[in-house]
Length: 72
Image (tube, rainbow, N blue to C red):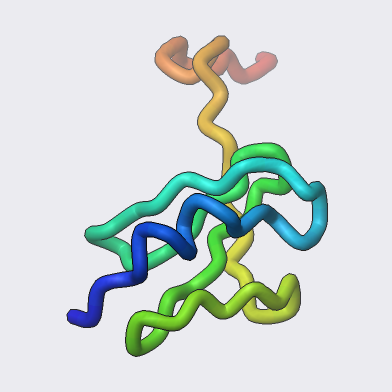
């Protein structure tokens, strides 16, 4: 696994929202929480194209642990 230059990580922003990115070293992705996208890192190079990004789902804390009732 090739590491990303830490200086590069400091200056990169989400191309969609221009917001900050979080580095997920294990998944080799840059996460934009505001856009709900994960940009892949291939061979140490961040691929900052929205078309290449994976859509991430926001986990909803409300009602996620409660079973849903079905109408009778």
